[in-house]
Image (cartoon, rainbow, N blue to C red; front, side):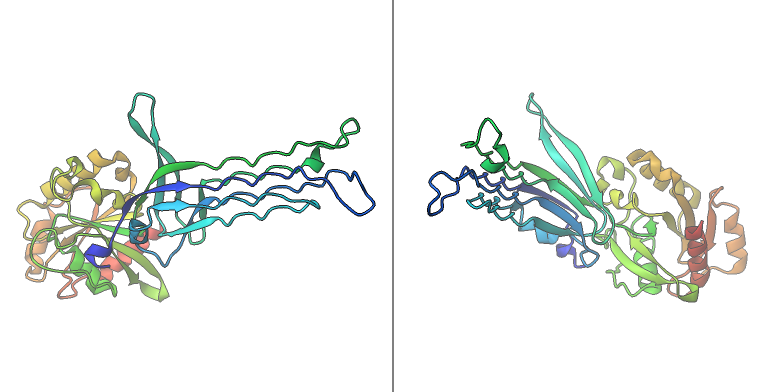
Length: 337
């Protein structure tokens, strides 16, 4: 995913179709001067529907299709012929897409009304239902009214503005400051090729990779853009990418071995996640100390005494391959829990 091609937030305006009107028609045949009512029903208006598609990774296709209008249903006609239903508009979206409707209050303020989310391939979420078609006049024939001249009009469709927001679906999310080695790890354990350089915010979008575990198993890992202190307030890349962490089953904290204080860095990262969404603390966490290829066993043992308590940790080097297999085993074991 190139940086310019990743879109995880888009506003759209949608309108569902009106239902077609029922027909107030009367049967007309040779030698039958006054036939009974035979007006057909109107067709249903088109609905606006989101459908999960695992082939999509971004919302960029909606960036230039922000108006989604469905057609109206056809009107009914004689001989009890029903009008055709209009086609629904099916919008493919990546798995992890959340839909919210923009609702304007009487005082002019706007609110976001949660509609739903799409998390599985083929799953459908109706944003706006099409209007129902009206009933033709033959439905209204009664013993006391043999020739009803009334037929139902079609039901009106609906319209509204929506925000679609993508939260990346991954089993393992990488959490760390810029230059912690997240992109390098992803490039080593998967076929993903994220941009890697030695400056802050090289990663400007989430990158996903499929990690092969033992015995043919695999899991999805997400490299999230680096967090800095104050991210929950919008500093750095802010909360734009913090939401992607909400969908990860396991959070792998990554702190480089040359950190001045690993425990302090871990607490800062944890604090940013907590202030963004306290529920993130309920997720299972592991800690990887990165860039350990220059450390000897004695120094690693000394560093262990200064690691955060209550979290399983491992010393790794993506470049040298140190403990990478062990890390994958730990992650797979954690996923099974």
